[in-house]
Image (cartoon, rainbow, N blue to C red):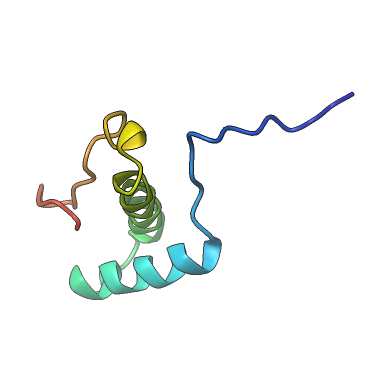
Length: 74
């Protein structure tokens, strides 16, 4: 039987949440062209981090995401 393994320790944000977060990051960065994937992945990690910060056992495993200029994205 081919079952998807469930990992309760990981949280995958909803695509709509990633899209909204990525949009605001894109605006904050000055609407750069050609950085869609980088901004999308940053948004996804940011949302993962936020979810983990509500669960201390996860917050210890993941580094705090930083933007392209090295500042923390909180």
